[in-house]
Image 1 (tube, one colour):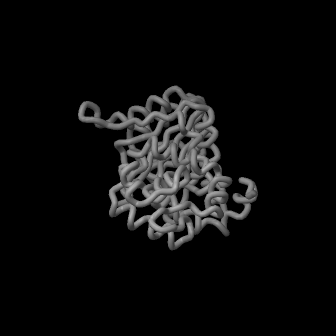
Image 2 (cartoon, one colour):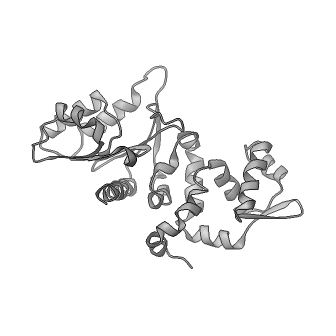
Image 3 (cartoon, helix red, strand yellow):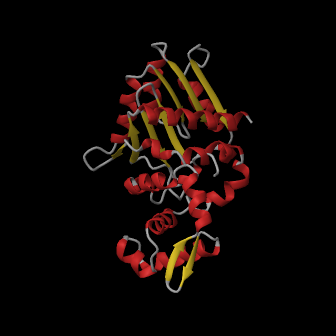
Length: 265
């Protein structure tokens, strides 16, 4: 049995293989279905909302990579990959979580999240999906601002500059709350113009273009907020995943520290 610790220690050896799945939500949903019951393509089509053409294309890739095998017209999850993936970060819970928040993840760059954080992302299962609507097109930003106003500290990964969010963080810093942000180096001038970075309670660290994540992350003592970029590279300002669960806050802390460590390395 492969333990989580062993898997993390051997991350470089499994990275390419595991990334094959999260790059496609459809493949993950097919894997999840076959984990429950062997099926023909027609049965998969009938029991999911995946169209037949997409099933055909994706199951061919799964078969070529050894994730599934076919007996007559029925597809089975291979025993080796079933055991491997089941032991690896409780994959089924991760898939179910992604299914529950399908419209948050669909057509978004989920594989920008470090792999050890991705395979524990079900820690966010008590989250709420916040979406802008025609009545309030700034709802997502207001959620971030309100979370910051009430915070004892703020830590986050900000791949962009947004005036209202940063002004709210600036007000918090004046109350001597701890601010720790990881920011793209090409935005350094913008942040230095807004903040007094000489203050003891402000700690900004900058990453270069090669390290830019495909997600926005902010967490405080009480709340976790996650945003994603679309597949075309544009940040989706219309959707956020928000959780006040301590598990989610701890998950965010791990993601933050992992990303920071990669910066330092």
